[in-house]
Length: 277
Image 1: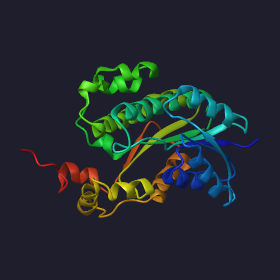
Image 2 (image 1 turned 90 degrees about the vertical axis):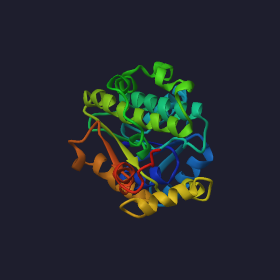
Image 3 (image 1 turned 60 degrees about the vertical axis):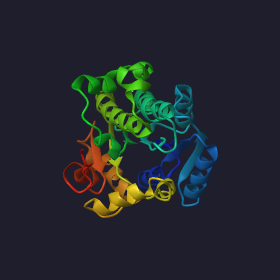
């Protein structure tokens, strides 16, 4: 039996982190599209990793429980990398809340029940959670602590209070950060750690679709006016994950690391600042 990593979301960021942290382990990779999980498993297995593909729907608790049960067949679950989700241009408001907000909360909760001492997790959030106006302390606490099955009933998550898919995505990512804080207390009782990473624009096949789509000019403007002057790479996200998931990050838990080339800084205090009329 080996130690096991659960990786959700068969994309470039998840694969980069699994490459960095998953050697010597069994990696169980879940994706809503099984062909995506199979493709990444093939690529990684041909590079010497031990990867098992699985179908998983992040918005469904039973599906999450199934992949955890599958993973436990191979050994102790010592790592979680959650890189699954949908973007504002990919999905309607309801789906974004069900997958990115509710699904992530359920995944952190369910893995937290089985993670072994010394275990560690990261969930991929987004710079978007840092761009919205501050919530009240009460709203933040609701996002952090509301029982998972009641989350989508919260007043601030009702359709009449959500402007568009971007606003839904921002709320989901804010919830991810707050949920990580609350879950880190529960994971800590088991001797395990959980953190989130909030990347800016990272070049992936999905992002390239966005660059060439209706919001392409918006993204190109963001690159030009952020301090880094460029988008990021999946390997740079893996650099941060390696810190958080290794012994070098042993004192870091319940934290969110924003890594966006300074785009959020520019949004608040630089040339990306929205014009107010």
